[in-house]
Length: 362
Image (tube, rainbow, N blue to C red):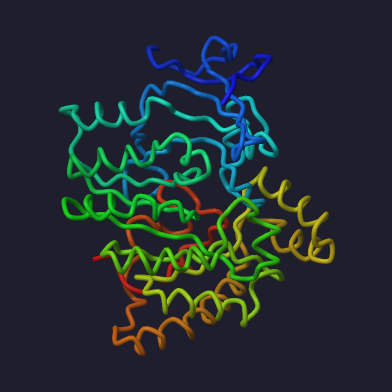
């Protein structure tokens, strides 16, 4: 890494401030800005010292847990539909290329987590990771923040879960197994499609989806309960019966503890970005998607139910073949709240009706 040149305005709260509204600081006063070289070429890393790293989820969000950790902001996975893109605008950056290439790194995250867990005000609540951007995106290969946080949580016997699209999680398999021997640990892999054309077009920075299926197998074989969010399922692009069956079958065979189909979800800002992307890549789909999402961030309920039925038809018999009960009636696991990820919508998340866990976490 080498320093990047000209400073820019950047919105962030200082680690030593006294609270209140974040201020707009000159970047050189607050951020050590680096440019990636070698395998990180094309990325910029904005080092910040976060005031807090364990963040409480607002009660109005109706999530089934209260606390999250996000060591990074922005994501090199570059998923065209990512719900977190607008959070970069809050920092004074844009939700397009900046979100994919200018990555905020909370360089003091591991130390802050250790300190916050020791606070007498902390009561050992479940902590969800991967709720905004991916904790195992490419930056993690350089900074090892997620690894450090997993180690600290395990040492403290604090329960946690991880949602990721990355096989880099397998680097920490031994550490996760050790943590799971001391506390409750659950993982989720996001695998929306096995169609290579769809994968390459919509989430070009992610590992191959079949490698993610293998990660599901390896995590479960190691004793880490791991489920799959089939997210997002894109109408007209990745929702054919054959495509849905392919993903669901592969995940069942890999031993996924649950399989939850989640249709594309498009918030304001993301909707405009994604529809423009579709207009360039698949112009024949643009009109139908624009119509479907014209009045809501969600796919119409009837289409959601059809997706559920198609996945259910594969998953339930698949579990019976493997000798397990069909448990679609169980509530969603703690890190897959209705229509959301651990602390916010999963990329492409849908409605509560779409939460179809195969088996609840042990």
